[in-house]
Length: 193
Image 1 (tube, rainbow, N blue to C red):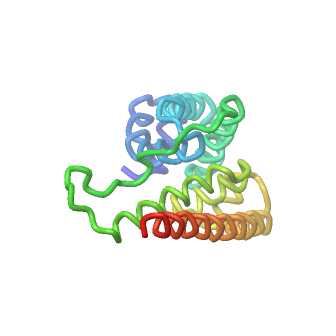
Image 2 (image 1 turned 45 degrees about the vertical axis):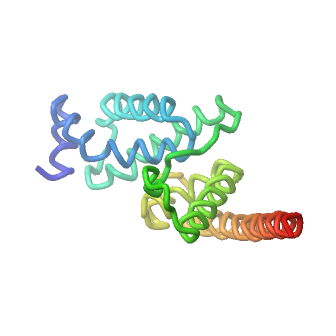
């Protein structure tokens, strides 16, 4: 059954159709909420609240084809509310698959990639909430600028501007991190000589 048919069934009160729609979107929703809040438990609460809100408000959705952007707009607002409540920054771990942790013999290349990923995630966490959201929707969820604009309730130009600003901040921060990392390693090498 296609997504639009499921939405129509939910609008007529079919709770089982909501379960099917949940199965379609649960992983993407958890990942998205986790990337916004950096908390597994909070992201579970957000997704649960979003699907409850979806069921309660789905009758207001006039166009079933636009369900995904409508749902992610709701999910975004809920995630922002939770993120503002939990202002403290939590450590980001397990967002991406880690290198084989059982293997003792990890290559230098894998270590450097892991270090770069950790730096990237730390810098994404430092972005303001709207820039962080745009980066996550664009790069992690693979949504278009047009879809993101619908979700965030803004113009496409605003999304492009936020993406540009966020990329610029991330680039600057990552260059700085690399410089600091290289400087620290150079000091270690000199101390060991």
